[in-house]
Length: 393
Image (cartoon, rainbow, N blue to C red; front, top):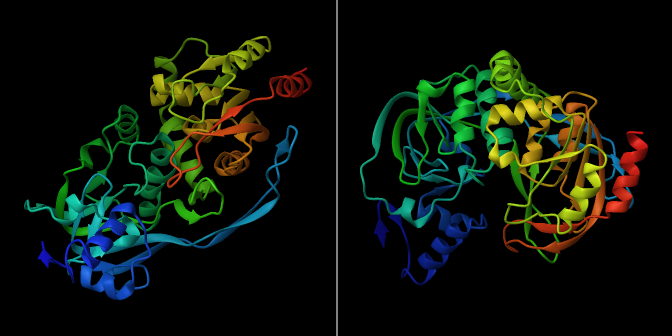
């Protein structure tokens, strides 16, 4: 069967159906022969790109174990960071809100995401785009604040390092914070919104490497987790170009005094909540800590808040991406589910020069067992408050 130039061998509910199901689930274990029949290209078939430009050489960074409040979860480690660059394509297609790439020969490039059935079988004609288009999409979560801030935006810095600016930028901009960020970067006029039905035929296409990769892990609850490369240049780019360059206008907009000690709540989130938050907030208030809800704030408000805070207490969640705007030497206390001690914000805080500590919390699973490790947590309030009293006596 051949649909939209993609060949399927066997009946749709046989081999072709199984392969399509695998693609839909985002599983990369498609056999090489089947990939060729489907018109798919993988990283093992490096012939798909017209050329590649190098941006940043491989690097490594050593991280301390952080300060454990009670049970230690993190160990001192050295992280290896791969080389980063930009893939260039001639006459390639972009589809969907996550920027799936189809090269000039009609092959889907799995390195940049797996096409959905809707994208595979799209019958509408693509919009032809002249010049050079830069794709800044994250193939994991297009609307997530953390992924946008620490993966999508640094991709543009990779392009700049490789000498590429682009006449157009294909990127997610449906959320207010996304539009605000591109406005602060001065890129609004070049934006082409990445939407679910997008289909572009680009004269030239540049796809930079991202800073977040999926790597398999072994636990009873979930099958994979993400690894984020926290790099000095990426953090400096975000802080200097988003906050520092616009500091005067941001301070004028948010001239009122902001709290110096904050607790970032996830009460309104779907998961990674603090189950005993009422008890925790009451105890923290006695130490001068104010509860905040970052999802209710503009990007400028969040940057100003975190830059002025001397103490940040928070459960693991996207709000901690704002640590890139914190002053060096500020104190961060992360509430970490014991069952899933993800290293994102530990590594981010270390790279930013913050004093990072954490408390291991009893955890209750509250997520998708096939996708990501989301746990609610129960905080040992007495132990946490004792540490904070000693630290800020």
